[in-house]
Length: 321
Ligand code: PMV
Image (cartoon, rainbow, N blue to C red; front, side, top):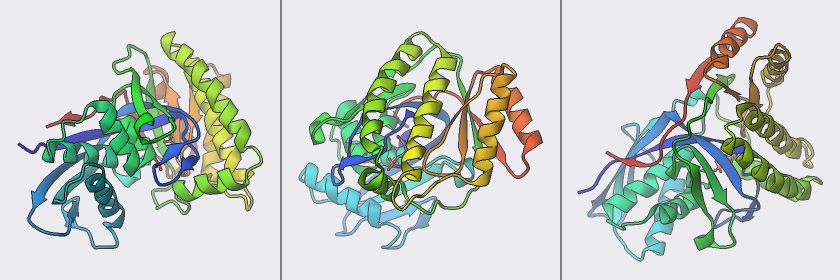
């Protein structure tokens, strides 16, 4: 029987930023993330007697233009597994744009798992990760819970995510500070491409990621949340340095983004554990402990107006419900 697949969002602590193969979405570097429990996508794929796919997102039928990326992805899957059937896709995104998380990671992970169930492909999690990666790079990591590493690999079969620890006993919590819920102006695909093409620091980034992945894995093993935060923040700032050093330069930061970064530094001076990470948008995710998160949230809400804070904890991998 066809099951609904549920996938959770993840936040990259060591970022994926740059593709060495655009079609296959093979990254230049490994990346490492934490799956979160707060936001998820539920997707069901039903085989239909039609030569076109029909896509419903949040109970609304998408137009041809709106569903293009998903249909292209379904074409890739049909080609991979040599079948011709088309689908009705019903996807409910429990990732409000107002939460400041990208829905592509949970969205494509849930879609890959939904097709796996509908076509009874019986893919193991490695092949599910490979399939999800073909939809969106970061989706490869949402197959697993907890701390996850995506191995860059050299071809379709060798580029997949693997769990580091799916149920870590570690005192970590993520505060998402939402500044601007509007659609980002530069997609991650375009941002990556411009950074790879024109930042003079791109080769340094590749070297840096290799060493930071090693360091953060040691910190995870030691359950050292401060160290995890320190490495994550440095990695995120280095990623954003690639956008500022691209030609022409660009940035995802808004004025409030910098303000929050300053506040985080002030909080640390007061001995409160808080470190920032930022993706391809202006919102800031703050790495905290369960103890520090309340203080951090209160301080941010009191200091900056017009921000929304959302708390998330460690989430699990793909589920069939
Ligand atoms: O998977 P994409 O194309 O949405 O790219 C994700 C890029 C970052 O969120 C900035 C970093 C990451 O590793 O998730």
